Length: 237
Image (cartoon, rainbow, N blue to C red; front, top):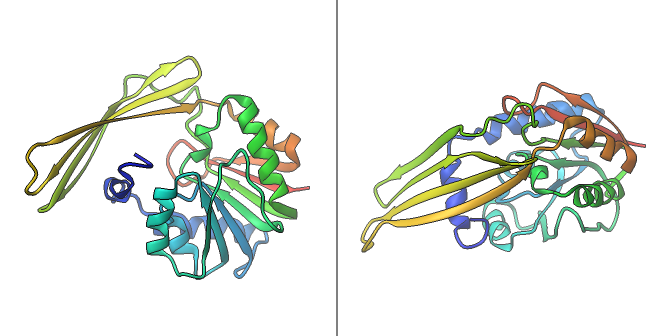
């Protein structure tokens, strides 16, 4: 989905209020002493929906491992906003930022623990001393419900989408087989896609410990952007 069907991503998430969530992120940064105009980096920025709503407040940079997602982000964002392709567990920056964001539970794709630790080191190297880290974690293992079904739709005359999933669990990994139906006006048939996502149900204390050991003083803020996820907020030592 992040490659061959990247153009469907924003359509199926049309319900997500990025503007309101970006405003809350800005409030969190301000509360941590990161004012407007600061240099902010977003890891795993995807199609740039958060950047789109934060760009008037900060000097922004974003990266993602999917060039196809970045291509969509470039269409949405001003030409002067820097976007680059990189993996969270192996990136470098020219000079540290005032703050780093990793939102919409993208951190959940980092497993096993060694990859999370590699990312934590990269994050620490990318944030100046006294700078701030904001991570939206994936669902905690005790909160995940195997067998829970979800469905999202998108309906326009030229294109109709349906995405259904029944989440399962493989040890400490949440497994979600997303079944897509894609109906395009004038097409010969309905397209059926299966998009498999595997995300680590990392215990909150383990994630906090990893980032503390990487160089952040961090805590879990239960008031997150989405129900049941919270935010990990850290300050670079």
